[in-house]
Image (cartoon, rainbow, N blue to C red; front, side, top):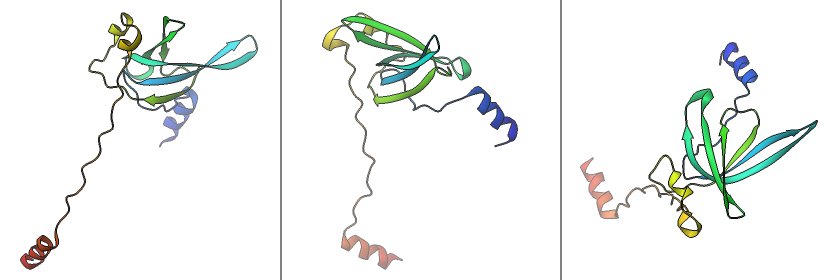
Length: 136
């Protein structure tokens, strides 16, 4: 890494966050400054939208608080975002999940993505191994 890129990264304060997309359940730990005090406020919910790239990238998180839907939009490169924690990946077929605004209760849940196991190499029997060795 050259010196210019290193200094630019230090000044802009770019942080690395886990990869997430619409449908994922995350917690955003956001710094709140009140007077001379600073505290971290967690906001846990489902990502309903990712928008933009680079320095202007934003994402919207929706949660239900006391039976009222609350949405909050965050700038991904904001220095006030302390950390983002990915809890579970959702299985959705849309990039924007605005239809969740009209749903409530059990129908508003997002199914969790099942992790696919990688294919194992097939087992080779002793007779097949012997035939392979004879062919060599």
